Structure formats: C-alpha cells, structure tokens
Length: 272
Picture 1: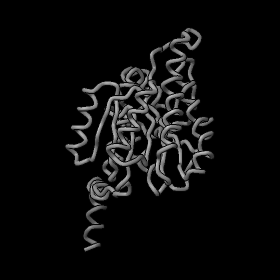
Picture 2 (picture 1 turned 180 degrees about the vertical axis):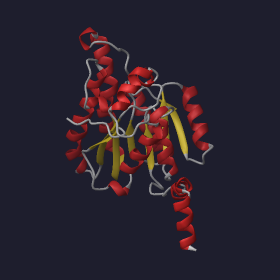
Picture 3 (picture 1 turned 30 degrees about the vertical axis):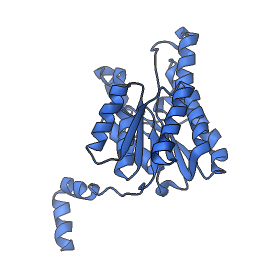
C-alpha cells in the first residue's frame, strides 16, 4: 500500500503536494487571537490561517460593512470568529477591541498587529507634519500601545506578531519605510520585557504581496518586473504566504523564537 502511494506521488507530484497539504494541524485549538486590519489582504489571510488551526479569531476594521463581510466569509469556512470596528489610532477603539474579546472569548492568547496607513506617496522631505504623525501614530505607536494593553490581559505563553515590511530593510525616499524599520526595532526592544510574562513577540516582513495596500507596486508592470528581478522565486507573493508564517509564529512550534523578524520575500536580498 505504501509503495503504491509513493509511486503515485512521484508520478504526480502536484497531487502529492495537495494530499500532504490538505491536513492542517489544530495546534492553536482553544486559543483566542486578535488580528487588526483583518478584513482584507494579509490581515484576513492571517485570521483564516489562525482559525484553520483552531483559534477563535477576532477580526477588526474601521468599517462595519467590511467586518460583517469578513466574519461571514470566515464562518463559511467553519472558523470561529467574531468582529468589531476598530481604528487602532484611537485609544477608545483599542480598549473596545480588547474588552470585547475578553467578554466574549474569555481572554487573549494571540495579538497580530497588522494595521497600517500610507496617506502620502512622494519624497520624504515633501511630507508634512500631519502625514508624519499619522504614519508613525498608526503604524508604530498603535502597535506599541496595543501590545502594552494586551500584556495586561494576554495569557501566559501568549504570542504577539507585528507585521512590518521588506521596506524596513530597504528604505526608499518615502515616509512609510521609516515606520516599517521602526517596527523591527520595536519588536527587539519589547522581547525581553514580554519574556518575563512568558509572552513571545516576533515580526514578519513581507515582500511584494498582492494586496490593495501595495497595488501601486504590482499594478505597474515595469515596477513589478524590477522587483521580481531581485527575487529567487519569480512570482508575486500572496496574502496566504504571510498568513501561514504568522500562524507558525503563534504556535508552540515557534516556542523558542522571540524578538526576531522573519522575512517572507521570495528570496529577495534584504538585510540590514
């Protein structure tokens, strides 16, 4: 029987990969996971990956219609999920997100900080104080304050994942990458203190992923072609590529990993 299966896999490797990938381990069963900005793109993929592994997921977005759509989609895939509106830049919304999770789910085990804004695309010296404050406020300060808030309630053995970007390693002459570089440092700075509470924190730095947030990069064929020249895997990344890495970092398989940044770039040469 085993020989027959082995021959079948060798003769049809695509089918073999499908057979081996259909089983998703329930290694997050009983865990409660908050994912910010999780009604689309990387956030939604992270919520789905966590939910597929047994976590009870809490999704959030600034618009109720987007929350409702994401909740409906995830429930159609038999994922335990609730959702709420949340602008992470507002203290009252962060409090609401944490409090609702505790009231309806009994606690918090996992926090995925994914929310980000980019209201300005141009030379960094042309950015205004308002733009600068908004980018750093949502992308960096909110991640810190959410983590600090979660630290008060998150269960021992919990996990925090911050979503940065490859732009944090390869800053361009624009404002957004500055915030992404800051997240790499924030992760390392928080790791020792959170470890005292048996909480791990790690960072994920995606490459060019096909999301609405990064559409300006991949919709332009010339720009995309230049980026793909820098990668070993010659394709555009998908949100699911990042969701799986986030789920891994939240699992016991990553129990000895903290303060690290995992780059998921298709082999792009990107290091500080």
